[in-house]
Length: 213
Image (cartoon, rainbow, N blue to C red; front, side, top):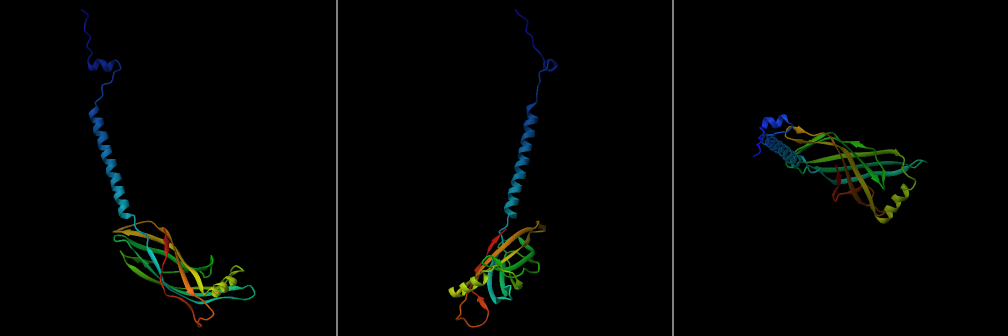
């Protein structure tokens, strides 16, 4: 009968064999997975809470008091009054408007200088009326600008863009985000013809503006 050689765990360890305890590692993996899942869930919930809807802008009215060319260089003089309505659609997020500049353009050409509006805070689901007078004195324009205005008059309507750009911050409770740039584009279609009485060209229909963030 051959002898039976039984090696103890200690003897195996001396020979290079490893005896590992699996339960502590399993517990460590389980704890790590639980913590990671909790962090991911918190980040997801925070994203859902703090991912606000961009503000809405509406062009309420606009009046063109001056839009003519003067001098041998045919420089543009313009004067436009506008009123915008901004609305915060969020129920739990406030908005700080740190910067907001507006200007007018026609056929892709800027026809007024930028006008800055004062900074303001907008609460949950609040709306604000924003008025500005846009001025342009001696602005250089393309040579075909006068022809485009005359053609618009022959058609009977003038289509003008009123644009804005700025920076805003979101506010949730006491937390305030960093600054985000946004752009606003409004389209005003105004009656424009030789049979109209003297006075400003007016826009009173109201129009929803596009906002990019």
